[in-house]
Each structure stands twice: as structure tokens, then as C-alpha cells.
Amino acid sequence: MIKDPLISIILVTYNAEEFLQRCLDSIYIQAYTPNEIIIIDGGSTDKSIEIIRDNADKIAFWKSEKDDGIYDAMNKALDYTQGQWIYFIGADDTLTPEFSELAKELKNADCIYYGSVYKAGKKYLGKLSRYHQAKTGINHQAIIYPSQIFADNRYDTSYKISADHVFNMGFNRHEKYHFEFKDFIIANFNDTGISSLQKDAVFESRKGRLIIKYFGLKIYLRFQFKKLKAKLFKS
Image 1 (cartoon, rainbow, N blue to C red):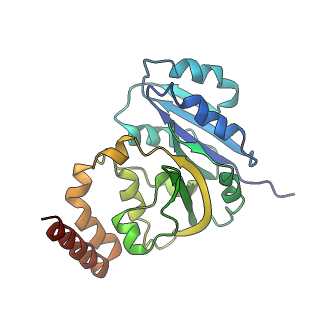
Image 2 (image 1 turned 180 degrees about the horizontal axis):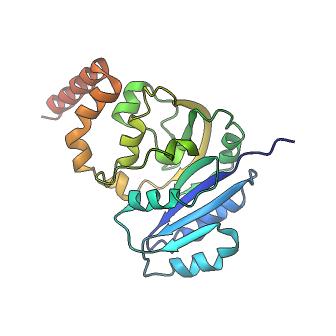
């Protein structure tokens, strides 16, 4: 009998006592059980460590130390994963039962599978065109990655908010990996976090160059036209 593949669920925390147990509970109740939880905590000073210790028997690995931001912590976590698939979730997010439905669809290790999330109670994004992948990006909590993709790739920590968007851009026209959409809403995404409230200044300054590099001239020109149109409309 072929076993279902193991999914490593990476949870990065910092002073997350308000949300952490709820997030963990949403993982525990999944119908798809071959999963492991990896927690990298950024040196919390609230009760986060106490909560982690209370759940230690259900956590494959955890550590707490100061880091250089969320993507630095994610990169650290990848060194401790054992799964064939990787999923990242924020401490203030939760999984839905449909996460397990998408998990059952993980068949091709050359695919980056993604679904949708709930944002403010509504389905967010769905299937994205190449243009919208360039402009908006796939929500990070909607993606399950094949673990082998991280053998030679890590998040660029010079981007403090949008490193996942940049990471995904690099696989838009990749010689091996490709994105595949499955119509499942797999998480409740908290839209009050830093990624929703602030822009990544470094990313915004480089966005045009990244689009032309990974998506080509046609999508770049469309992006610039829409940007100019929005600016003129606003003024």
C-alpha cells in the first residue's frame, strides 16, 4: 500500500499567544494526518513559548531565538523538515477542512499546487492568470510546495514583506516546476498582518524589473499601462 506523502507545516511565531493555539488546533483536526509541525519562534516574550511547550508532544521540532524577520525564520525552518511537501502558515491564520482535500491531490512533485483562502470571510483570489501572478501574486497561505524546490532555493531576506511573491515569480517560466490550481479554500487568512497593511519598499522599487525578467515584455507593458492609468485616475 502506497503511503500518503508527509507534509511539513511550517509555523513562524513571535508574540502570538492570542492566536497560536487556535492555529495549532486547526492543524490537529485535519483529516489528512501525515503532517509534521515545525515552529520557529523569534524570541517571544509573551506566553507563546508556554503554549508551544504545552503542545510539544504534537510538534516535530521547535526552537526559539532572535531572527532577521519572517523569511529568515522560514529559511531556518526548512532545515528541519522531513516532508515531501512544504506548507507555510501564519500563527494568526487557520487551516480549513479543505486543506486535507488539496493534500490528497499532491501527485506531481514538479507542481507547485495552490488553491484559495478566505480573506475577511470571502474567497480570495482563486485561479490567477500570469498577469495577476505578476501583479498581485498567489497568497502564501494558499500554496503547498514540493520540498525538493527548496534544495537549491531560499527566500531572499532583503525583501521583508514580499519575499514569497519574489520567490514565486522565479518559477513562472521555470524549466521544471509549474503552478497548478486546485479549487479548494484551504485557509483563513488574517488580513490585519503586516503583509496586508504595509508595502515592501524594496520590492516596489524592483517590481517592474522582476516582472520583465520572469514574465516578459508583454505583461510588463500591461503592468506599466495599468499603473499609469491608476495614477492618472487618482490625480
